[in-house]
Image (cartoon, rainbow, N blue to C red; front, side, top):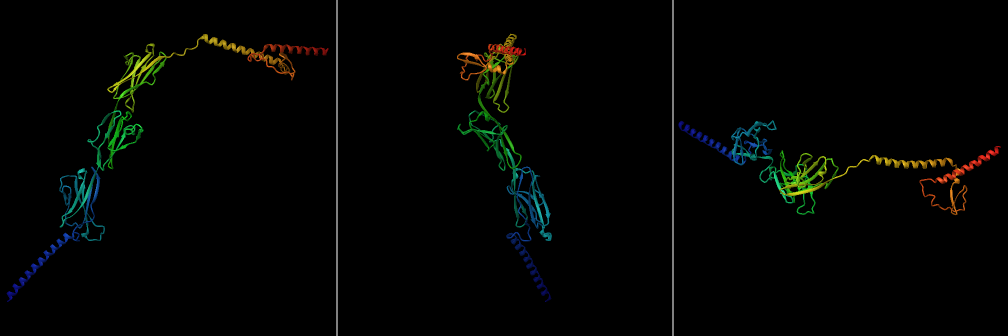
Length: 470
């Protein structure tokens, strides 16, 4: 009886333990199913905040932070989404590239009074020396059941670069009057902006589209990968800069030189050049052409070379290379140097000539001694005559008194000239034509008559005074 009871207890205990174990397994399975449907249960890790997107320039470093709450013994892994490459697991880097590095930092939550289970950990993915191929999204993954993950993307900024394909060569040649197109293809992220500028002046001459009535205009710069120049003029020849820039420094540029070909032209500022003999003379010839010309000075179909009394100097324009000035210097001009000279310019585009003539101009001759003597005599004669007249006038003025000056007025009455001190108001004045015939020389005869009259009166007065005294 006692044995039967022991056997019954054994069976009950075994059955109880079996049921207890099954219940535990069932609770674990239920918890796993619950985690699958609701992964944010308090006993599982969770992400504190999204990773976000990171932007960095090429060659720099990008860092993606992944912050987890209650990480515990779980592992954090990083995977590149584009090609499913595993970069790290925990703190160990799986990829062989030394540019990738993973760091793990433990930090308590902001509320320090919380339990230890509320602590946070941050796993950071460092991508150093960024390349364009690193652009894309990366996954931060936890080895939980079910797996927890979130994404962070990296954008790589690339400075501008001018491509060889789609870009004009370093030199573009066109004929004057044709259209020209300068191209510049640039790459970068963000897409760079392309500007065109002249290298020296900074201004671009634009011409009207197929219409000569539209005036030319000047712009500081022109934007776009292509610079369209219509009916190209020689003034547009020169170097143009294609400048590409975006938000990432530095900006880059390419130099494109535009050549405008046209036939030569020659002209001289002065077609007639005069100079005295034995002086230096400069003959100037202005030439415009591209390509460069062969310039010659000729006289009587003979080419003049530098040497002796002749010197030829050619100089180009600093800003307009199609302009050339040719100068022929003749030292100590001689009779044999007088005549016509021809300036000629020749190139593959054609030939041009300009002609000028050199002639002699006489020097001013200095006055001789004979001429100076004659001029002195004539001046002395004029001076002596003037002195004589002045002396006569002075004598007459000293001899005459106010009464005498009044009495010597000349009156013509009935065509007879009389001298009187009292003028008859009834007698008409008749102008004597011979009286004022010569205004420069005084009437000496009248002066003599006046002197005689004055002497007679003085003699009479003295005689009367003498008789009274007796």
